[in-house]
Image 1 (cartoon, one colour):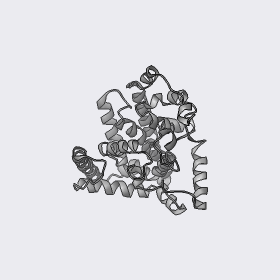
Image 2 (tube, one colour):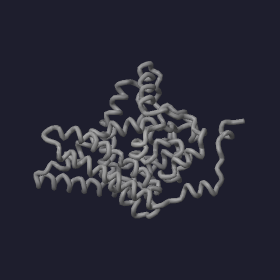
Image 3 (cartoon, one colour):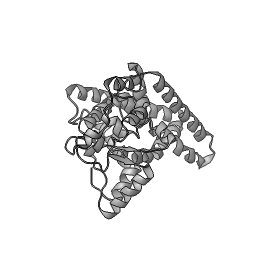
Image 4 (cartoon, helix red, strand yellow):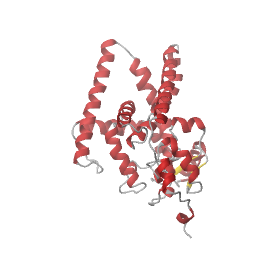
Length: 304
């Protein structure tokens, strides 16, 4: 009997119930997420002198993990109401310099071709194979270089990504130009007012917070096999409640790839329903990275 045959097979009615999209859970989660950002931002402003850099790390972590609602909104599962998905996606995408229309096309290609070295766009940036490469990826510098360069190229009308058809290419170019115009207005306004608020409450914090997001994201697929089975090519990570909260339950990542129609608030129930289906599970982010660092040091870590 194959491994697939051993997996639980929930009935269609149960899956339909778990896949129901609702506004309430998403509204509560984004309001508390933004409320936490307001608290950490207030701590940045209240800190004396250079001490503001300490709360800026916490503030940056809260900001960069707006990637979680961005991810959920491109799946249209954060909220039942369409405009809520669009507004939250645009706000989160603006903070992360990751426009949601382009990211949606990128991400859906990743879902279709997960761990396919030829077609998964996430693998266009290979995973690190050396300790130096690992430090480069985790620093977040590689992310900002790649992301800003892509935004600038699309704003110039250059959008060669294979996952973009003509319609999506036009939308991505227009979106990049709109985002750049807004960044320009924000920068010009800051200079005109002599204000450093954008630097203290956004730019510096997201630079400081990005390494934590990189560490989190590396666990999702790195080292998983190049097979079509979503339960095998994706890793779930056992994590603490605060991590599950700020990541909108995406540590249940194998479950998400196995059934991306299930909203974040129903993923824990789906994970329980499919208990035993995971092929790759890490007992935590620290053990995962300790193991990967050992593999890198021994020359065993591959680029997938």
